Length: 273
Ligand code: C5P
Image (cartoon, rainbow, N blue to C red):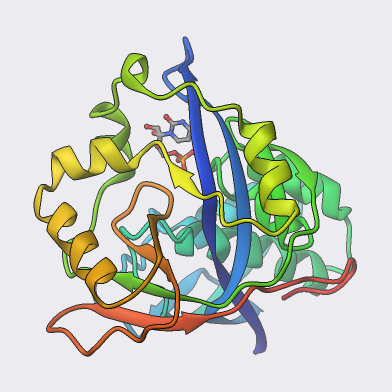
């Protein structure tokens, strides 16, 4: 078995531009890979088989790990089974892209195990067929993403230490998007926010926060509680329900609440995280 680290991501800002005719949304988001990771142990085998330390994760072919393996088989014509053990640490229904990272890591690992039939660019382009957030993981860890999320521009931003905090209740991405009324959003210019973050300001926001709070009203109280601990910036990531929190504070232990200190993660071209 070979071991690969599978990182989470946060959306430092997430601007939703409009709903597209295909049902997806046009967005502009600054994504950052973070030091909160799952571990994947993989080996080629006769049959597909997935085990996971977390019993709430599906281990059948609905798991993005197998969707990634199917995609790799389809694109390369290779025939194989895949044995995987997934050690989950990234909470799900959190907006942290844990499943997307697992899919990207599987594609990367398979390409290594098969002696690189595909380039990193191929893997990134293929991966958008199975999820909007997956191509990002083939960047070097910081990228301004537009379109459905698959058009990526690498950027360099200053390091920042944060806490990730998630309440016990999670949120479903399609449900949050269904609750979004694009006509009520503030017309922020994402390029302006991008420049601001590059120059060291914490200009973070998330257009999905409002629909998430509507769907799950207790989330507003949760956010206020995080602010009361002394964090000066508390912003939801992706479609929630996790927040990233910045400031001179430490969240106290809370029943059912996940919290972890994180730093930004970088990837060198030709290597994985
Ligand atoms: O692409 P992915 O499977 O991750 O998307 C999950 C859901 O999130 C989609 O079915 C859609 O409801 C919503 N979504 C969207 N616009 C995007 C990305 C995701 O509406 N750019």
